[in-house]
Amino acid sequence: MDVDPRCPDCGVTMERTKIQTGDGFGLSVKTGEKAGGLLGSLGVNKSLDVSPRMCPECGLVRLYAEE
Image (tube, rainbow, N blue to C red):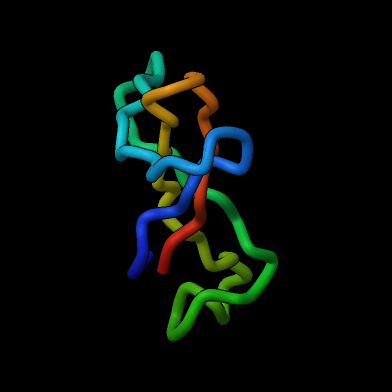
């Protein structure tokens, strides 16, 4: 993400944060698009990393999918 998003409620810049999962792996989302190369030919879908952002004022957390 090139520009840090702003909180829709407070209008301030949202800060990067971390979300911990029980398995220790990062978050990702499946896009439904086929992955490239051999994995795509095997039916594996493309996935994108998730970048969590939090508003320092109100605590709103949003997740953004990134290439």
